[in-house]
Image (cartoon, rainbow, N blue to C red; front, side, top):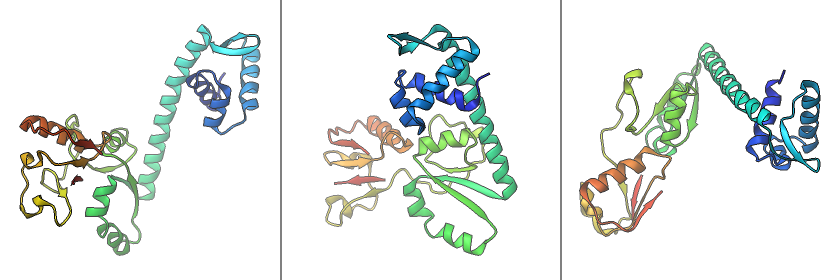
Length: 231
């Protein structure tokens, strides 16, 4: 029988292209520990996990690939169980995990959260900072309890309570001497011929801006995917 730790070893070795040095570094164990694991397991179970040439591992055997695929399924279930246990433990302790994009955290919650914690000393809040796409996945995987998101296009809101915080398209930041600073409200076509940056592809805002520009057919060759800053 392969234990969870052994499955993690085996999966990492396979995903490292059977390079024990790389696998050992990723697992923070010694290379000899991995070699010993392979030797002991193959001897005890009577199965060859790897093909060898001149005594060196070159790739995964057919039997090893079957074991690898099954180990992946078990590890995914095991990780899911860990998330369930962690979530239930946090609920019992009264801890709430809130996922917030770093920009939203600093612009909208930098004063609210410290004040809330001072006024509610028994409350336990853990803030998770990540991109909006990552936060959406964490919410769907029950890793966090609440997420502050720019609404993703493929997000099924029917399974969640949704409370809008801000109704706006996107906020633009620019220097005080920029020509567009005199405009109280920017239109998308005002961006034509200007350099600007926005979030990278880990955030829903990237795709929101991209779709909006395609919609109005702005002729923009200086779009640098990286809130919207105009240069």
